[in-house]
Length: 433
Ligand code: SDX
Image (cartoon, rainbow, N blue to C red; front, side):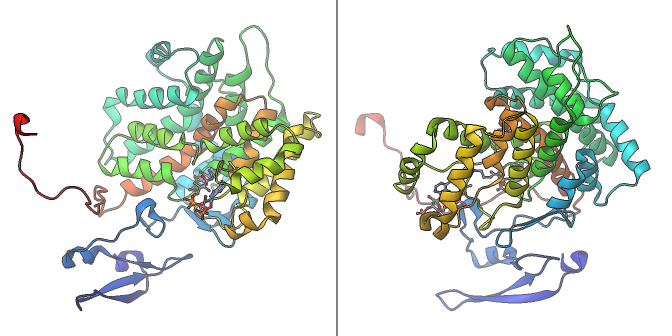
């Protein structure tokens, strides 16, 4: 593997308590911590033990780099702050998928390809009717994106690069359409068809907020804000939902089923569901006068400060800073500079960033802390926040899945365990129990 990766080869020596020793290869990447390849450990009949993977690298990847201590995030080497300023989400999608920034000509061709896949099969609409109108939109997303795997049988050979590329385009094109349909179904309005003359984000806002009875023109400031939000959410190396997509993909499952598994994992409040939970938390606190008591409840372990903390970032999440600036721009555009929740969020951030409890635990605002306030200001309802996250993250899931599928030594992911259950024992018939 080292030759293939062109990585420097070094060795870590492990000595067990019975005196046995093993030399394990160490590897350095382009950036970030070195790794120890523990594959040979199984020869000694021992496993490593790392629940929740605090110290485990599951793969090599060239897509995204995070430095949690320095608060850095690079997509294919480009800092997130620069890409967010550039503000072209499909350009970032091309970068994440292909590895380089596109020429103007290649970007135009890519945008056309994605646009040509934004409509969904008419039969797909029938899946919505099985849901209650008050179903959480994330439940609809898991179901309907997963249902895409019931279509396209003629082009589902995951070992064929053309089929994989087609699946990537279909997912990039259709997930926003399905997301907007989930919202329309929830509020009882008719589905709006994609409009090929609109940009990706204009089209999404049109499908979300237009109605057949009148013209809808997306506000350019709001389009720019949502473009930036999608860029900030596009990828984040081996987070829980991306790792889920990779594990599902390692079995050879089709890409649509893999993305549905990623959506399911994203839904949890510890992950992508945090933006919805953070806004609900701010609404529950309600007033700056209640902040002190809430912070005390957090210190007493009665509550979590949603939108704070991160497994990797032990410094400010660089996305949170961009999101805070975007928040202010959108609120200003909407005439909501004095938005109560925004002021409450900034007060909460200030208190948390100066309080030893949070400082000791290196708890900083993450991408989800401000995103809820921006999304609410864009007119998106709280229960759609994680759906928006899923729309932005689809490119990350697709790019990481595709990267894994091109690996020559690809194997099914199959972790082991430390068994702490009952020792061998014989069956006891019912009358003797
Ligand atoms: C995302 O992985 C990714 O990259 C994810 C993501 C992406 O783009 O894909 O960045 C998106 O999911 C961002 C995270 C969104 N989640 C939240 O905002 C939910 C609130 N945060 C926590 O649930 C927590 O911070 C996690 C889950 C994000 C991280 O938890 P860890 O790494 O397992 O850390 P931990 O739970 O062991 O916490 C360490 C300490 C504990 O206190 P002690 O036991 O040491 O006394 O910090 C405390 C925790 O109790 N702590 C918090 C806290 N987060 C951690 N205390 C209060 N509020 C919090 N939010």
